[in-house]
Every structure is written in structure tokens, then in C-alpha cells.
Length: 562
Image 1 (cartoon, rainbow, N blue to C red):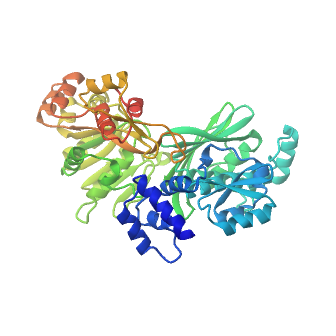
Image 2: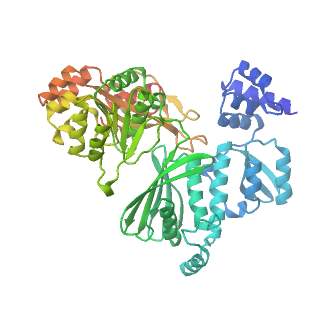
């Protein structure tokens, strides 16, 4: 019977154009003993878990659900314990009369289904969900539910009763016992963030509660709200973990946490801010297990990669990466350092703070408490016989001046700067007080960049551009008949997008640009010459990715300056 089901699953995948007949036969031939065809196809990289679930839905006539969009009542969770659902990889989601509805990745796992029936005394109805969806739901609901219960806020009571329970139950935030409910809550917040691939966690106080929000693919969304009575202890626990002063709630503080979550090394950058409604905390989540250092990860096309490599291969000069906070500037610099890292060069970085530790590169943190600023650090670095210097950010005139002098004395200097476009970076340096002729002679190139969300490959469709979209395409001489339209499905958490890539505006400073900058030409003349030399604007680079079906016009217009 199992073999017939497997063949039907393969037929559905073949009919949907997901896999070829050759791939199915190879998976059947090479799969491990007892391994199901779907698992083998995923292991060989022929399809995704989401595609298998879709095919099973068609094959077996079982509905697929998106657990991220469901609210699961506490009464349902009580029917099955966390240990069982984690081991069985199922998620109870609803009760319908005498039936319990469970989400599973394998609706033909009859022993598990029978076990659920015996444990609950109810008939079992199955729906389909991906493994990642189930794992995330278990972490979200069981972890939070157990923690909130131990904090005494499972059921809404009068505030006085909450405070009483809170004082009796919650331990000192410096108590490192894993039994502490506050520690469990912080761990659960971090676990959910890592599973959701969030880049930032926001803890935002309001008048009577506080919100836990996650930034995923650049977009901020609320995960849940909790009673404000536990906020002070939650913030105190985060401060203890990041070596901040828990007694001072009146001034902003910064800290750092290095930890292991789900077997992955995670680096957390913590910032607290006193507001009129209480302390707000933001945690930047850096997953160190991800390989984000190579040039291949940046999303460069052939032309952009050729310019990028040419700029960073020069023995001296300044290469600046510009853009707003969160546009991937540091990732691009790390990719450059990874490319340049070799035994015959001395690379030194000064950062605030060091985000990713790179083997073979000397990395230095600034420390304002002892007046070890970017400028002072640069002075010391220049006495260390460097070939390549990376400065985390050019923030002031003093740092800019030292960077220029370093480049003119035979060093390659890489850094970031907050400007909206490549050409505006030149005028910003001049406005900071750097002589135009020094900018012209020291600047090798500028890379302006933004991050755009990738359109979901599961639910996007090819459609004709609307009238307004066609006008945008025509204005920038982009010829395309069909563009991708985002819709939303279980795979992308109903957002229409999953993942991000960068778009670039690359200014290679040639002799004509040097002449214009030295003569203090207006910005529009420099831009005109750069475009004549072949530079694509950010919006044009974005529309090229629209043409390739990588993103949408809406997403490009959201982050571009036209």
C-alpha cells in the first residue's frame, strides 16, 4: 500500500513539473532503507518540503494549513504534552466536537495518529503543514504557554492579583537557574526569533502591556502582546545577560550576548532605551552559522561583480559602501575582506562593534569610554603596517580626514557612510570639510545599496504590468512582457515574499569623474557623467531584478529613490 502511495506522490510531483521522471527513479534507487520517496527527493535537493506537502495535499485530498496564521487555543494545547508533539512532530490546532485536528507532515504515520487517539480519547483529523512550520508552532505555543503559565498570567486577573503572583513567583533576574520563568521567557523569545529567521527583536512598552515584535525580511510585525507587569524583570534579565547595569533605567545602554540556540552560534546586540511608558529593548540577531561572507552571497550580476572586484583589488584608495541602516553595508564589506584575505597582506578593521569574527584578520572594537574612537583607532592602526584597513563607518570629519590620508599613503581603505546614493557620497565628503581635490584623488569608488525582498517562488504568478508599472518600466528603458506578482501562501507566511537580496548602484571613479570632483562640479553633472559611463541607478538595478522575476516593482519602489 505504501508503495502505491509513493508512486502517486511521485506522479503528482511530476505532473506539477516539480521533478523529472529521471529524478524520481534516481531517488527510488538511491534512497536509504525505510526512507520515504518524499524524504529522499528533499535530501537529494530535487524539491522542497513545501512542494512535498502541496503534492501530498493533492494526492491524499488533505487540506494544507499555514500554522503562522492560526490562533491555537490553550485548551487544545493541554490535550497533548510538549515532549510528545516534539517527538512525533505534530501540532494540535483545533477541537471539532469529538475530533481533535492535528497538523502533520506525514498523514500516513498511523502509529502516531493512533497514539493521539489513545491519549486524547478523541477521533483524529489530520491537516498538512511543513516540518519547519510545525517546529516553529511548537516553539511558539508550547514554550510561551508553559512560560506564561509559570509567570501566573495564563488567565487574565485583576492587576493586583497579577502583581501578587508575580512578586511571589518570579525570581531575581540574576538567578541563572533554568527554572526561572523569566529566563524561560527570554529563551523562548530568542528561540522563536531564530526559528523565524528574524534579524531584530523589539520589546515595545505601551500603557498597559508590551509587544514582542520581530523584523523578518526587513518588515516589522507583532508576534504577541504580554501584560506589562512582567516587563521590568524581562528587561532586567536581558541586561544581566548582556552585562548592563540593571539598576539604571534612566539612560540608554548597549550590550552583547553570545549564545547557542538550536545548536547554532548566535550573536545578539542589545540596545535599551528609556521611554515615557517604560524601557524599550531591541536585539539585533546575528546567526553566525550562516555563510554570509562570500561575494556569491551578495546577489551581484556579472557586471556588478566585475566592478566590485576591480575596486577592492586596487592597492590604495577609498572604497565606500553607502545606504541607510539595515541595507547590508557591513555584509558587503565582510564579503570584500573575505575576498582579500591572504597570507601576504595585513588587514586590520576597526568596528563598533565587531559583528563577525574573521580568521586571519585583525579586528578592533572602538571604546568611547577610554576615548578609543574611530579616528584614534585609525591613528594606531597606521603604525601597525597595514595593507588594508576597514573602518566600520565614517561618521565625522576627523575620521574622514585620516581615512583620506591613509589612502594617499598607499593603503586600501574600506568603509561605510550614510548617504542615499553613490554620487551624494562625494558631496557628503566635501560637505564634511574634505577638500574636493583630496576627495577626487583618494576615492576609488562608491557602492550604494539597498535590500529588496525576494518574491515567493511558491505563490507568485506571471502577469502583465499595470499601466502605472509600465510607465515606470518605460521610463527606465526596461522591456518586459510579464512581471512577477506577489500573493501570499503558507510557504511565505502569507506575505508574498521570502528572503532578501541586494540591489547596487556602483560608481567607479575614473579620470573624468576625478576632473569634475576636483573642479567642484555640481552633483547633477557628476551623476550625468556616471550614467554616461554606464552606472545603473538603484531603481534601474532593482527593475533589472524585476525583469528576471526575482522581485516585484512594488518592492523596488518601496526602497528606491526615483
